[in-house]
Image 1 (tube, rainbow, N blue to C red):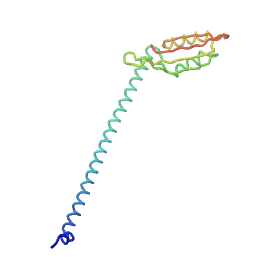
Image 2 (image 1 turned 45 degrees about the vertical axis):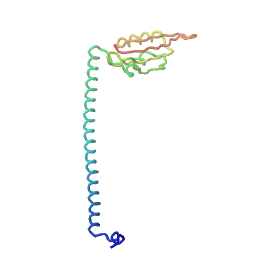
Image 3 (image 1 turned 90 degrees about the vertical axis):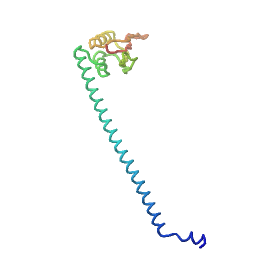
Image 4 (image 1 turned 60 degrees about the vertical axis):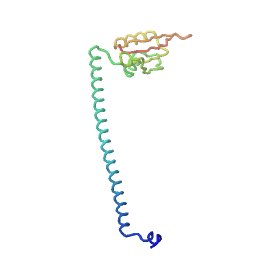
Amino acid sequence: MNIKDLLTYVPERAYYGLAALVVVSFLWGGYGFFNDARLFDHKIALKQLELGRVIALKDKYLLYTGAARKDSARKTGEAPLSLGLMEDLISKNFVSGTLNALKPVTLKEKKGKAESVVEVKVTGTALGEVISFVNAVESSGLVFKKFQLTLPQDQELIDLFATITER
């Protein structure tokens, strides 16, 4: 027998062995993919559960801090600083003035808490309206951080720029 005959003659058992090896490798790879997918699904479920707990804790925290803030505001008779409150105070007190700017600003942190401030700019208003606005702001428990009145040339009306914060 020469080499050429040996190479052309492959026993039938070798084909069966090769087929079995291919089948086993596909089964082993499929099991690996199945295992990885199952592990991945488990990790997703754990992350969703953790996220649900975090959201519940956040809601509970916001509910508690909101209730505590409202209670403290109710006890002291003060309203928490908000754009809605400021807009309400401005619309009640300024008849002739024009509201040019009403925007929230966060200043430096004090004692680990960011201080919330609202900037107000009103142009063309009378002095009596400014005085009633100042009284309304102070009676609602808020404080002026900066207060600037300007009298433009050739006008009788006043421009107001103020930054207002909570006590």
